[in-house]
Image (tube, rainbow, N blue to C red; front, side, top):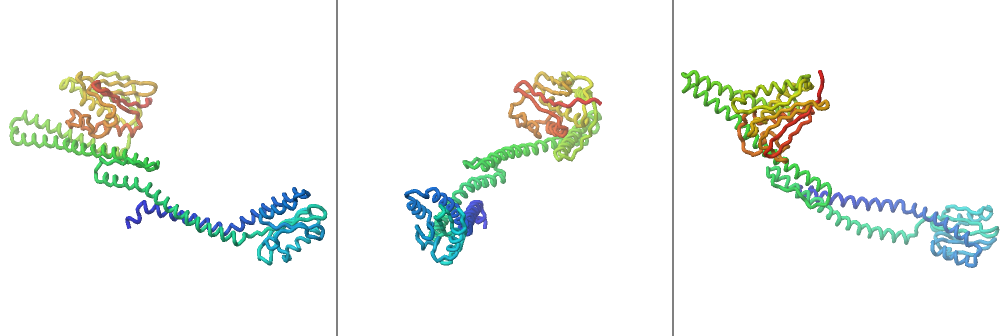
Length: 463
């Protein structure tokens, strides 16, 4: 059943049915409209013959012209002068017959009517067919009658029918051959693509969907699947890294909490100072664990579009300065300091808590990758009704192809996981989602060995 319904057989079947359908339509139209078409052509032909007779009347070779017209067009021509027939073609033709009473009456009425030209369709009782007759008055004493059958001869009909049968068989055979060739041309690359898709579905991303097909849609499908494969491979790699890194980040504080709790219980429970230090470490690791869980929940909500933004007016410069003050301890512990150029009264309209989270995460990221100069540069300037903010470190920097990847969860340049000094490793992914929820323009510039600068631009809005 599967082989019967495959693409190749379906294409061949549909093209074959289409070919047979076309031949049937041609057969029906030829049998139904052939006689009508023959009548229409005969009427048009009679008009042309009548014109030639009128134009050549009186010439020395008038009879030769009549003979030629009779022979070339298969009509009957009769010339009557007074009461006598002076010229007549074969009277046994279907177009004319001496004992056709209807034709006789037409001739008599035309001669007596005095009209110059007249035509009529009359029935030939001898041959049981319709004929068209033209009466032409050449002068006061001479009349010409041109007759032609409006039905094709049996011989021509039989020849046409035989030809149609042979032509139909030839066309049908050619159509079937073409159908096979087309079905192969269409189905072969698609079947190859399908095999590669099945391999990719099993987790093999080393497949190649490139095809030599000249069909535009198939080539587009091939290119799209290659792009999809590459993206899925990246996603799968990031998924693996995410699981490994989240597991590590969860395991590390839990291990430390357990270890210091056991130390308090078994060793330091009598030493208040050591017990206090151990408890502070447990609290710090619990805070880190809580921060990680909250970041994962926030990121999940934002990516699921179930988070609501609470817009309000606030001064962005005050938010930035307040967050910078939270990192004052780094001056003492790690000799990291901030170089700031921040305008005042930078009023914006956004979700204040989310923008605070953005600033905090960007500064945390800069701290994690700070350069040897231990300097982080923060600028916030009002330029043409836009508040332009940049946060810059002087660390190792990034390659161009890595600039878009850093917004992914847990993406790291060296691919070697290390615990962040500040934050959870989800910061930039959260930043990206908050920016996109606010429709804020953002980006990153970086140069190897010179550092990285993150920036975003918000519309300035007075309260």
